[in-house]
Image (cartoon, rainbow, N blue to C red; front, side, top):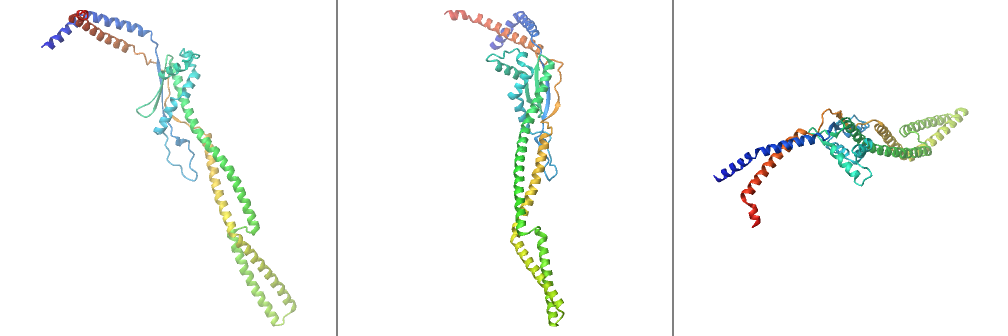
Length: 364
């Protein structure tokens, strides 16, 4: 019962002082409204974009069909763009491009000038991931046109930096292939010269067909020698004409010389066969790999020189027509409610102070 009486007593105190509370709230509301009118209007411009996959910057695989590529980036690509967006490079770009020291009225020569400017910029320049995994880049400014220009310029700078990172990696790969190709071309030239010298030494011009030709010629020459020898023996046995015998002897001697020459060539061929075959296989493999590397180098060069977008633009920042802040009505309502609560607390504390007799307690 005493608790209800105390509550009723407090409510009665507030009711008796209702005019004071109302007047305080009205005064706070009027004062807040007047003060809020002097606050500058800020306009927010927002651009929205998705990260592009780095697969788009890769050349088509050599000797195969194009694999499945992602057009939109993953979480790593998203984090990379957010890191770039909040980097000092983007901030410095905006500061220099739009002369933000002058625009924000900050002394660039002061010790804390750069720090104050970046703090100011961080409040007005915001990048965040949306619930649809896109990047929302927003810029607030008193000038609505400038806010849209800054947002679009920041997005393009982010795109350029992301492109530069990828292009830098591509350039290193192009340079590496260029150096490798130069070395491989020298190596294949040395290999070709070695092959030419070995071929000349062993008189081998075709490993595959030359052995077959030698085999056929030896068999044919042996057959001719046997046939000529038989004819010569028959002529001698029959005391045939001497002219025919001498002619067959000359032919036989020529065939025998030819056979000996073939044997020497075959022996030389067999001696150099494995060396020439090994060099030819090595040259062929080297030439095939060099052709693949040249094609890769060509594609890498084309990819490096081709334009590449690191982002997929969804919404370009446009000049805002409505201010983003201050919310003057919220200020007035909030301050008025706070004033009313504080007024009631002050009245209750004053009433409690009087009834308790704190002055006598402190005096004692």
